[in-house]
Length: 295
Image 1 (tube, rainbow, N blue to C red):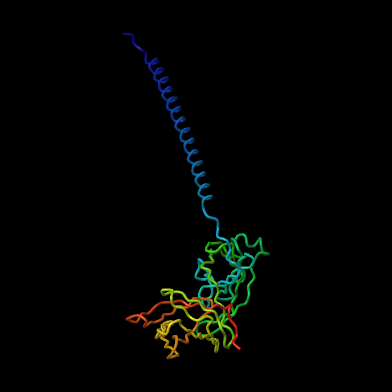
Image 2: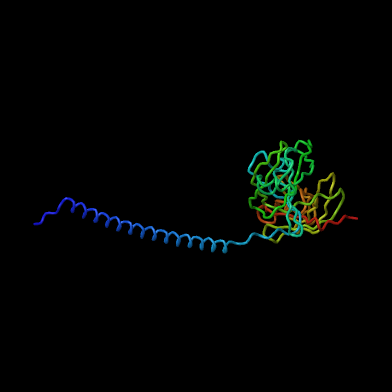
């Protein structure tokens, strides 16, 4: 057997190692290329999926019909919110499809608002919202003057950025939302006697009340005369208070308080038409647009 010199052996080993390294590098490069291709394909699929999902999402709801509403003013801060006298709410006005939300704050310490980020406010002074001076009345009867603002609203029930400028000259970022818009209740008419259309819901649907109903306003408080289509109601409940009929013959007639126009009023009528008396839940709604002053 022919002997191999140490130098030849080392040279052969070096060549073998180099070959193995090249093979490994080639495998690694192939694997990396395969990984990049796979990642690119995954990214393309994800992008395609995102576009598809975005296309399938419903469009934002259209603005409310023109009118006046109350709505919640939700914020991310206990220091920046609607005045407690207004129960966390403000007034949303919709005109020509554009929404503006007026909110009375807790004091005069916030002097400007900016729809957007605080970092952008300084460069857009022309877009700063200016305060109004509002008078609020608390539950104890005390009144106070605070600042209020008219805020343009793009969409309801969605968060947006609203920066505030404090009296010390510093801007702060906040996230707010105008939500749960409801038609504003009409104010009570001036003291006097009126007729007003009333609609009823609830029960079996067979019972009705006379409409229009007589509505009396005294010291700003409204009282309606409700005449049922049956003589079998022996009492009504309104806000937990029991009211008895004002007549002894003919269809059951009651005088009940009305807290607000255009807002469903929950009532209970107890009927004795069946073998045993039954309390039945109804809602009565008095339409402000139908008010006519009695002559």
